[in-house]
Length: 215
Image 1 (cartoon, rainbow, N blue to C red):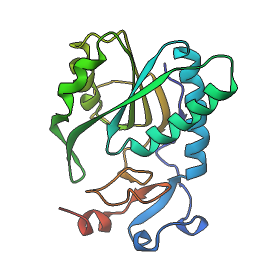
Image 2 (cartoon, one colour; image 1 turned 30 degrees about the vertical axis):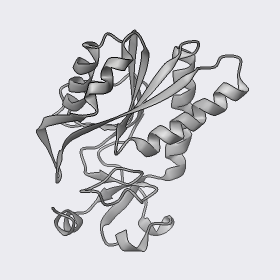
Image 3 (cartoon, helix red, strand yellow; image 1 turned 90 degrees about the horizontal axis):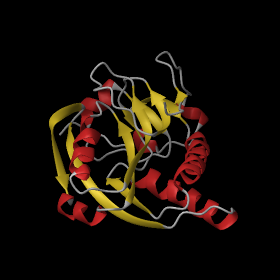
Image 4 (tube, rainbow, N blue to C red; image 1 turned 60 degrees about the vertical axis):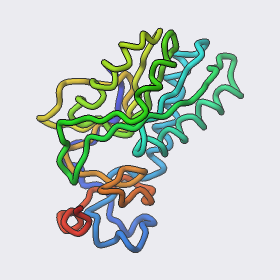
């Protein structure tokens, strides 16, 4: 079972005025639930665990866009630092895929894979899928079944967040940063209809903002 920092349902979080939050979002957020510094410290440890388990293999790090790009960049920076400063290092190449399964705050059942035709290049490779958040788990299960058709040598999944939700399929990634309540989270590249990607901390979106930024 993947180790993770569990954030309970009754987590009070932190008041917005304790941190630097863009002024244009101050009215849209309830609280900061995971400050940026904590995200970075947890990401550093995830990098160490990945190098421990996959070190010595050439890894293709597959970033799930758009949400995963910030976590992906930070995670790879920590892996790179470990490569330079330890006896065990991991040769890394990167690739990108985009999955679309969202409209407003409801996860739709349709998962569209953009760039999936290039998955055939992963045959025989060790693949690390880097995702920002796993909610129902169905999006990741769809990607994993597509990947399995390409016969990679090994596939591991790291997700910064896993949401506790009754809608979950039961899927759990190999590496998890934080297990979070079933609230709508934004920030650190988690968006709501493309807004809030420019917010450093992970915050809970308030109800007014859902209406304000609705498509």
